[in-house]
Amino acid sequence: METGCELSKTVATFIVHKIMLDEVGLHHICATPEYFFQAASVLANMVIALAEQPSTRLLKHVICCYLRLTDDPRACTALRTHLPEALRNGTFDSCLRDDPAARHFLQQLLDNLAGHAGGAPHPSAGPVAGGGRHGGPSQAGPSRKR
Image (cartoon, rainbow, N blue to C red):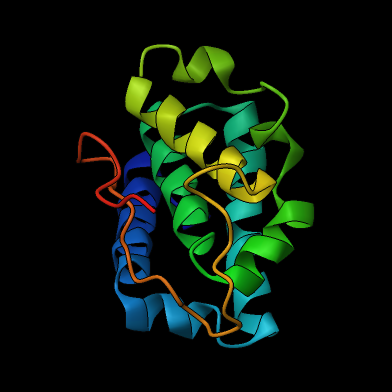
């Protein structure tokens, strides 16, 4: 996901997002702190690179990966302190200006991490308590509501 041209990075990130949309895939990534932090580290490195050389399409896939991770309560808790600052501080405002879906996904991610309506972490301690799926970049919006 970190190497190659923009298209190969986008395709790789799309595939990882699709794997995460499956409950088994999300559970696997969040099964151990090592797996989670490895995935989070790759995503964070991509955000750093995107701050230097923006790509709206790739950024949207990265945001959707982070958004899906918030469905796991432990991952959501970890992301509260490990989400790259560039996703919080407006670094990508101009990049996302013409993509309302990506802006929506980013706002939902930030809301989930803040524990606001619709995005509060699941109360159970299990890996994936809810079971919904976040709509990806090819969809109009998230397909689940809490």
